[in-house]
Amino acid sequence: MTQVCTVAYVYGVVQGVGFRYNTQHKATALGVTGYARNLDDGSVEVLACGEQEAVDRLVEWLKEGGPRSARVDRVLVEPRGPAEHKGFSIRY
Image (spheres, one colour):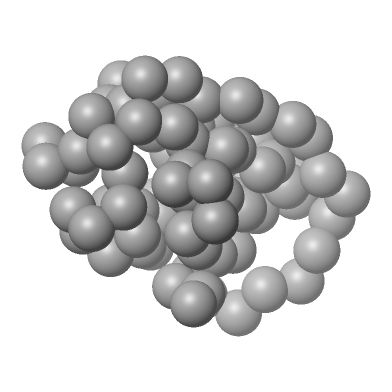
């Protein structure tokens, strides 16, 4: 199967609400690798790598608002080249 990587920039109330932790949980359940990290502008960057369908499901979950504690205003998505990641981590 073909592995794809996508980066999503999530804007809204997404820091200090457990967003990265919940994203890690969802990604792991879908078999997606990569990371989630806070950015200085208040957004969260999510790198998702895996099977196309699993990555698409994670991105759709982000667009639908992610965890209940968050408020997602917009999600910008860009394709990325293949990358090797072990698991899904939270970066600081």
